[in-house]
Length: 420
Image (cartoon, rainbow, N blue to C red):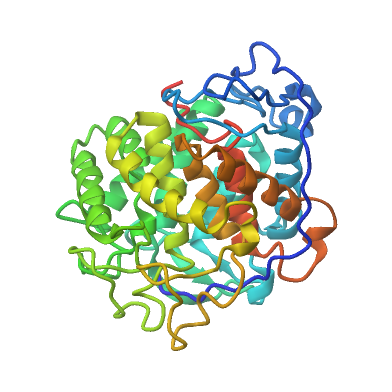
């Protein structure tokens, strides 16, 4: 959906080291990691949410090996990932209502936040939070079985229609929850939601922005999650999801240009459009910044060569811009790597936050970009722990969510639990 992203300033950066302690046996292992670095994998008993969630198939930390050995991790520390999750939960999860809120936007709730909360809950093994957030989402489904995208802090509808990225994150999280907590109720709900997405948010194999769009020429490429669609195909028995995979890559390739700087909103030809977002639609900004995360999962989990081709472009651009520090990255670019015009919502004026370099760091796990991968990992440590989270704007809802999700993916704690 078209919504303004709060611009966060990047400051208070600290570089934190990780102890070179071998990973314990039986915790998912360290397959897929470069041999020159060894992550710190602390035992599950270290983390309170594991005890509170009862018996889980995959307690945190998982450190799950990616099937594609070319996808490499930084030298992570599971304590750092835990800190990011706890800080995220403390700031954005409202236990009294079960919703994820945006403090910088009058404590409102958007459906994408419900998706983020469910993903964080299932992979961090926080069942109580997962159930509460899903309970909120389930209570706010529209007539199509999809979540209405925007609510005020008091629960009033502020924006009608659904947002497809939220619905697919929720469906994927539910299918993972069925495996994580051995409960078919979650799986059934995930299948139902995936079927609703196919029925109301897909047109001729093209993923639409939501159930109120009815226009396959208004496309947000940051919603493309091809690794999810493979899981949906298996769970629902509907092979049409593989057409969504192919159409997503066709549009992504057409929109990528020479640098991978895909516009926030495009038509089926990959051309940037302004009909949904009149100011920022044609430029690489706060929506498009998420693309490397979702595409990297398809490379790491499924060895998809079309994903690798895109990652080579976008991570190549990022790494050239930030050879030694993420401080040189901007929060918006034209499709040719320039400064967006002044008519945008200030895209490119400020330093990029975690919503940009977090997904970029996940993309850098592709292989061949280890230096940039490690730079982004350490930058996120400084933004998700310590005093930095108390500085206004640094740990905003959007940056904080993508920083936390990216740290999870960069430590083997975001994967396909239906195919271990």
